[in-house]
Image 1 (cartoon, rainbow, N blue to C red):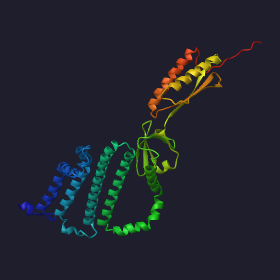
Image 2 (image 1 turned 180 degrees about the vertical axis):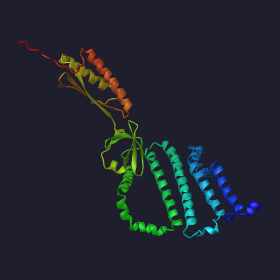
Image 3 (image 1 turned 90 degrees about the vertical axis):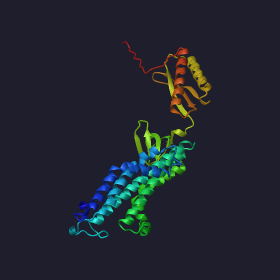
Image 4 (image 1 turned 30 degrees about the horizontal axis):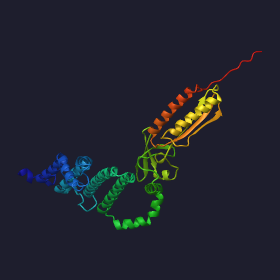
Length: 363
């Protein structure tokens, strides 16, 4: 009993015990407390999040909850002790070490809440993304990451306003009014960011592409993975990740391969110079026939004897395939190429290859 009543550094042993005990409990039991709080918060999403599940929610929010619990424990424990009077520290409410420490702890606590809010926004994004997968429209797939980013920005702005109001005693109404006056200067300073934000809205409303489309613009070719506030992310054929500012996308020509109705194939067949005119006519006619009869090609193919090359007689072959898928196009192209080889050999002709004839004059 004497220990709890004895004064140590200006505080009783009981106060020191409570101080250390609260911190120790918050550190040792942070996982238990965070799990309980996580389950309580999950009740908000329970009806709409059955497909995503509670385990995923726990995994997402557990870290910020642990941070808040430990920090909250330290914050609460600090109320049970006072610095020794002989240190001459300014009381709370006046500028000094005590007020600075309190405000710093409060800022960290608000930061933890902002972190938790952003993680909850991510979980909402998972719910929306799952719902978007069961719809035919691709627009909702594209809107989900945008809305998640918007929620994160709103959470961060609210948190910053709370810190400015409670810690720095800034009048938020006056601040917002002041932003109206300084809006022009702010707009000029953040011109690129505003252009990128407007570009993201242009993309959503004009819809030049959707998430998953294969596009090319500005020398970048790949599949659209995400459209955000500032930029669009593209996965290239080499599996690299390219981030392109939205203003660059709306200001450049864009070729959306996924919106094509056909795929064109155009090439030349080179036959040796000993091929007769009759053979060329028969070969061209047979190639035209297989293209016309194929259900995956349009009915307007082109097969023509076009040029006398340096080492070959060239037949132009051009057709359009009824397919958007690259793999399906390659399979069709391969089938037609094999048939062309069979036709050429059937008529006793041969494919040419680069060659030169050298004539030696005898004197």
